[in-house]
Length: 194
Image 1 (cartoon, helix red, strand yellow):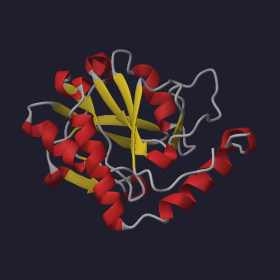
Image 2 (cartoon, rainbow, N blue to C red):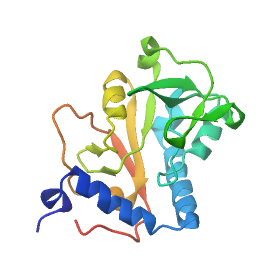
Image 3 (cartoon, helix red, strand yellow):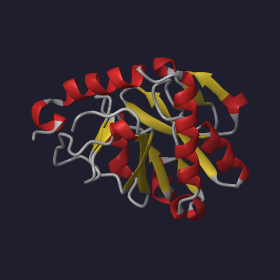
């Protein structure tokens, strides 16, 4: 039986996932996000990391708010991306009061820039995605921001987080795509027929 990835291109997959996301209530999103965040915090990768890259979630993404605050309380250096032109710049997260609305209406940190020369110090990167597959392939939103950033994170354990319906058997991938080392998903009551 063909999977969605066999019969759909990336654009169609993004549309299908977007439709499923719209079925989620705010309460479901919050509860599922919290469960995913707790699973991340229970991982050895989180506990061992001193420098962590997170992201500030859009309304249709798994939240990282608990991770941001937990990371700070645990003494981790928490980094968040900021859109600058067609690339991501990493900045130090200094708390919710040090955030401003940036590109695409996403809250972005106003802290110091984390220099690219120190990207090798990032031990854990928590990465959003539209979909992930068991081989570690990630389908992004199509802007290419993470496609440019991820190859520069040479030492980081790359962890994709999503809701379970975003975990597909296979997604379209290209040779240059950087694979995730692990994906954590949640919310099993919605499924693509893959």
